[in-house]
Amino acid sequence: MSDRPPPPESLTALVTPTSVLTQFDRIREQYRMGVLDLAAFNEALKLFQFPDSDGVLWTIGATSNTWYRWDGNAWQPGDPPALLQLPAMPMELAPETEQPALPAAPAPAPPAEPQAILCPKCGAANVGKKFCTKCGTKLG
Image (cartoon, rainbow, N blue to C red; front, side, top):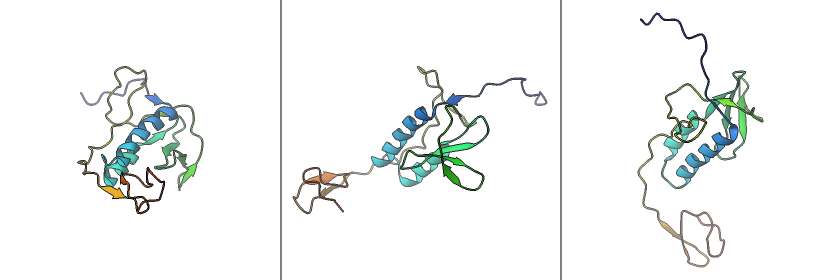
């Protein structure tokens, strides 16, 4: 029975670039908070590549929210079309939305105990910050 022809029509799950950015921001925040380690975050980046209706591949910059298209040789900045296709992979459908959910991130890394960094200028304790929350001095 595996000799069946494909159906004459099929549906393609579509998603807007804005909804992709919203989901990607969640994954990027998990990385910033230490829930995902660097390897897991980089694996998640691979899931955020979406073809358009012409087959051009689009992705988001890891830190910039800039969209890039694959020109066959390199990623080039560009403006994505209004709708992108979800890649063919197992996905969950969002129960209360009209659009399917985006690919889930890899399993999170075990959270590390955050360490406070003392500001060299004012002595304030700062956890997970690049700048002192009291005086604004750059930390580390």
